[in-house]
Amino acid sequence: MRRFLASITFAGVTLFAAMLGAAGCEVLVPKDLPAFSCAPGAAKACPGGQICSPAGVCVPSCPETPCGIDLACDELSHLCVPKVDVPDAATEDGGTDSTVAPDAPLDSPIPVESGGDTSSLGDLGAPCQTNASCLPALFCGSDSVLGDAVKTTGPICTKPCCKSEDCPPDFVCYGPGTGGTYCVKPALLTRGSANGASKGGAACTTAESCRSGLCAGATSKACADTCCSDADCTLPAICRRTLIEGHNVFACAVPPAGTTGNDTACSVSADCNSGMCVDVGGFGECKPHGCGKASCLAQRPPSSGFGTCAYLQTAGAPEYLGACLHNAENPGGSPGSGDVGATCDPTKTFTSDCRTSFCEPATKRCTDVCCVDADCAPYAGKKCRPSSNPHYLTCQ
View 1 (cartoon, helix red, strand yellow):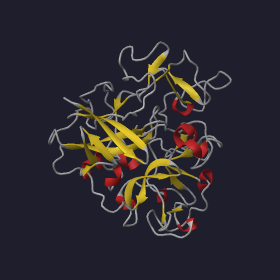
View 2 (tube, rainbow, N blue to C red):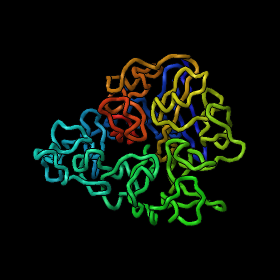
View 3 (tube, helix red, strand yellow):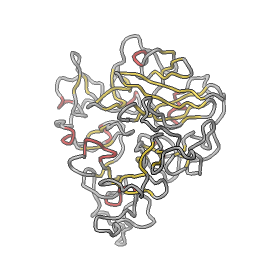
View 4 (cartoon, rainbow, N blue to C red):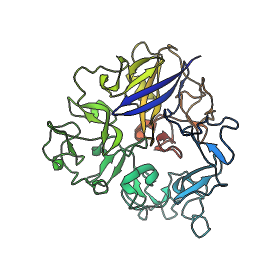
């Protein structure tokens, strides 16, 4: 089997993917690797005192190297992850965080003995320290997930979203470039009011008229907002790769004249409706946004055997984008047999243990790419939450 390097170039940014012959996909890695690039799980992949991260980069291993502020050591992977992702992470006074039930999943609230009262739990936008501090439908987002939105204010309770209408009034859907979009207060983003009636792609003259609080464009202005599919946008805008507040996101925008649809030939990303031209074994193909296996199956061409999702990672300071990689080399086939939650080997190069083709490096469990909780509905008990490292969204 051949292993192809898939690259995407737009606005001076190159994205690279490992596209696996007839087997599936994995997280895409940047072109310009640091001095020590590596294969996760490979023996002696890094110099002494370092460990290979899921992104294929050698980083200091813990606890030999202490973790920074707001980080804790994941004893299984020996990687530094946000404290909110480690329920028993030590507090500053050396004790343990007693607000988290020892056996509770990360996204579960504290068990409430008085008839399920959740009045003490944080609502959307409330400050938090752990996922257990937030209402059950929410999680605690630190700056490793929400980026610039909370670097100065600290972690807040939030949830994944496709578009700003998915959030309560005066909240918007924000893409920090970490592989998901989340509900945050527009004031954290220096946006104004976000209670307008116009959705992404609609013509506008002022930001106040847009639900996202953003009216963009040099001449012909339109509301700029994130999206999961074309249905989230006002025609003729579609859901395509673009930049909002300096981050790579899928947002509602009108594709340039002459662009073509998914799985058509391309030379550069400007050729594609989706804004993503992927080099697949020496030839380019336009690839769409993906929110999991089901969304990719729905977008596959008739000649493709199956649709599967991967994350594209930008070179330099990494940002992540979920995309569909359709595979015509295995008509009617399935990448693997493992259901979501089954154990898997993330180091396999040409085969996958998972039906979704996605093996989570940190947990070594089959999972799926997602954009919102609804994408995880086929997998009982799973929600769409940031992974521990990198922090892209998967069904957990």
